[in-house]
Image 1 (cartoon, one colour):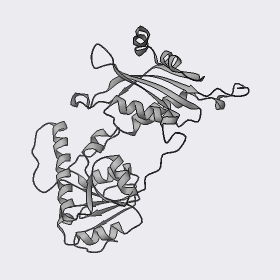
Image 2 (cartoon, rainbow, N blue to C red):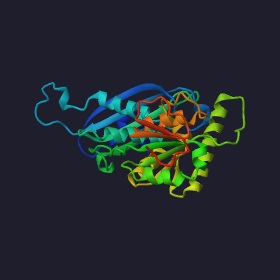
Image 3 (cartoon, one colour):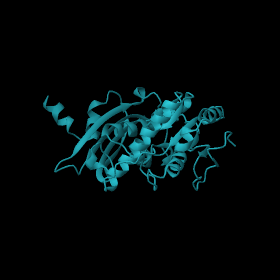
Image 4 (cartoon, helix red, strand yellow):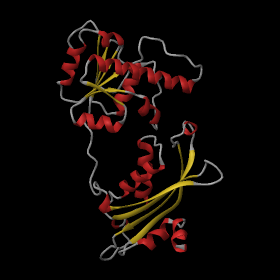
Amino acid sequence: MTDEIRLAFAHPSERAEASASTHFDRISLSDYTVEVEIGAFQLERGTLQRVKFNIVVEVAPLTGPIDDDVDRILSYDRVTEAIGIELEAERINLLETLAARVAERILLEPQAERVFVRIEKLDRGPFALGVEIVRSRDGVSNAGQTHQEAPHPRVVYLSNDAIASDNLKGWIDDLAARDAPLIICVGTGDAPSPQTGHAMTQRRIDLLAIEQNAWMLAVRDLRCKVVETRTELDWAMKNGQICVWAPSKIVLDAVDGPSVGPQDGAALANWFAQEMQAKALFVIGADAPDTPLPVQAMPVDRSRLP
């Protein structure tokens, strides 16, 4: 029991060695510290904090001479790249989520057999808060495979006049029949939002006002499903579901968030379309934003899309 307690707080390299049932070589990354915005609590939003990584990767022993050839081994750079890719993908709330994603990405490397990941927050008090996980190639279904790429959607922004138009169903019919999944964006409703006088809380209120408007659109056409997460969006696009984007989670969790505010609905839709690598952006009832995407705009009084 004493040894088990000692190992519970030991470095991942020692734990890896003690728990190995077969012979593997090991490479390790120790005390790799980055500053990142992470955490589920409100006080952790908008603030960078230090996060420390300790990682051990067990790899199958090389056969034949190494010949001092870096291409034959699992490079340390691949481990730090896995951390960087997951931190840049989106803002993450939980260390458990980050640890699992880093481990799974490392196990995509053909040499990797098992990985120990310990992540600690260093700035939440006079102590370290952390999580440690172990993942093996056998336990990761996508190890050695590439992630399936999500389709490139058509994103359409509807003004409030467009949402109220008798042409709404026809526009959705037309766009849904085209050669890409359809995601609809809306702006805030016509009713004025409460004003707080505080930038952070006002941003949240305005994003929620967009989501209220999204639900109003969903009532007008029951084919439209309000969706808020990237995972749900990817699933919906692959399964032919028409989505209405509820922006709060993706906007607030974005590593490189939009420079425009929620009150500029068309510009926010343009940012989202670029994040989704959209095939095209349609704007109905508003001016087209400046965008590198193929964009088409039309007034509400036209019944047929270009």
